[in-house]
Length: 369
Image (cartoon, rainbow, N blue to C red; front, top):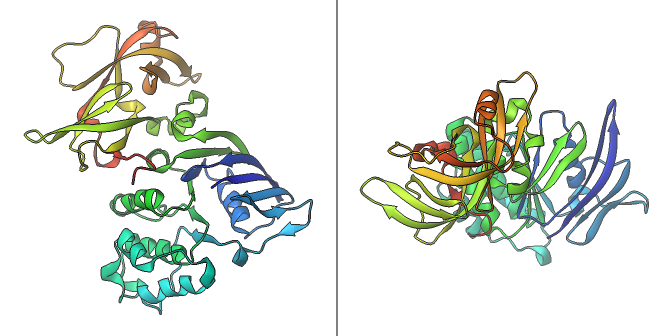
């Protein structure tokens, strides 16, 4: 389903001017606080009106200021999951979900509540009230309530921001499953690179109320000019991969990628499964000669495509072309100078298998559920 947005809105001294088109399963709005992410998602949801412009979902015009058209929120069939779950505290989980279903006209209902409950793993929670749920459980129920209304589009505004790392790790697989199995497009707001890299099929990068970039996740994340100094710690590249084999003795899996084979901690998926591997720039070392007898299990041939250095900073980002796949390496500016790293320089990219830790483990490739 196509999402087309071309809007402008002024609030006090802040002006949002955003235009993009997306057909992705999960479109992430990414950018720092104050960049306009929540304003933009609220315009799509109908909680705010633009001063000018239009919004289309699946070919239907929801807003066209010039034509005087504004579809109210309750008629847009848009589900909304907020940072805080906003469940009714006096209702059970089952009653909260039933409340969401109440807003779907019978002829428009597509949601199978039993399937949603199974997809979100909340079957054992149905008789509980929100006060007896963990943060992750509350968010899963909030997602279920939003989906029970059979929306044509699901908006998720920083749904993991209030959770600790353990609860985030708990809920991320459910969001992945939702992306791949629910069959409706998702707009996901986040300022966390790791979340966006793991979940997004498409990314809209916002900066100071403007769209700095938009497009497929792998292409946008590989752009060196978008990596702000404070984000370089989390900068990563995405590789589509196929699970080739398991090493049962050592608890490892071997992935086949365009860049070459990758050995990672065991991936809980069947042989042949298509997955997405995220390689953090900080985990990549570079060598001019192929290293021998080293502990790292992944040594990939590559060519320097570009470098980006911030004046006064100690580090630099290097973009590598590895068999047509893009890999990023975060090294010091001194390394760039001493190794003579420039476009066209052949190198070896070295990645430790253990760098694919719990927070960075390969997950299902979007659309493969």
